[in-house]
Length: 257
Image 1 (cartoon, rainbow, N blue to C red):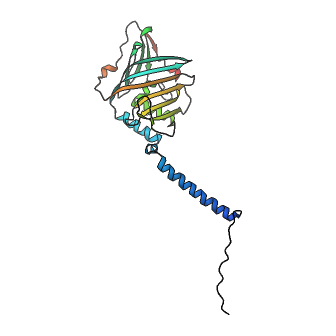
Image 2 (cartoon, rainbow, N blue to C red; image 1 turned 45 degrees about the horizontal axis):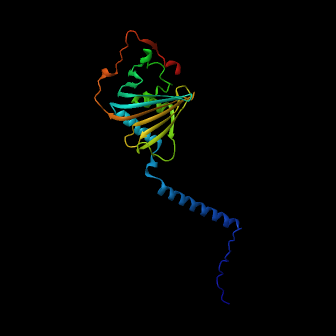
Image 3 (cartoon, rainbow, N blue to C red; image 1 turned 120 degrees about the vertical axis):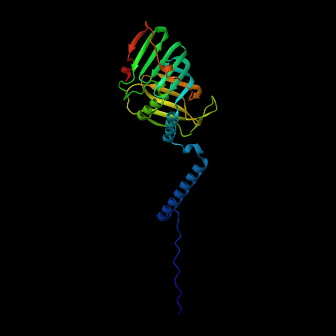
């Protein structure tokens, strides 16, 4: 009698079978993973491949390559529901040299040659004279010093930073330009500004605006416009001469450090 090889008996997998359910779960998981990755690759705009660290790297390079700049500025401070607005023209030259010439309030100045910072308040005829070599290790520094090569290096060491949202860069409704928005938080709470938002031009990597908050609820916003890079500036523009009858307060910023 001729024998034929037996065919393997087909076992129908039913929905309640544990093996069937396990394989089905694995296959579905891979399908979902594949579809998620594929849709992300198609939906994710190319700019989202930028990382915060890459943006910070480009900011540092931008300010490292700058020898000087000139710009209009506007500063707004809000504290206890009261706001104050200031404006004027600022100058910067490599080496930590800055000059903020205020048109409102008229006559006020902030000047530094990189070693000493002078803050002149015209209505009081008073000058704050700050030695910048004192206790530089912890303090975040005045917000205007953040827009220098030296100030940025200190800030990115002392603050954690990340994008403030997934969508980067963001389009500003004010000028329709694209900005990376970085959220900074002090690594250690040592006074000064505990948090900052930096608005970085996505084309030039210049910091166009900063919003900073301290631990007491005071918020300071500084914004730049009409920026001119690498103008020819004389060193003498960063010298400050104290008039004979001006009141001098030495190292007024030490208590904040």
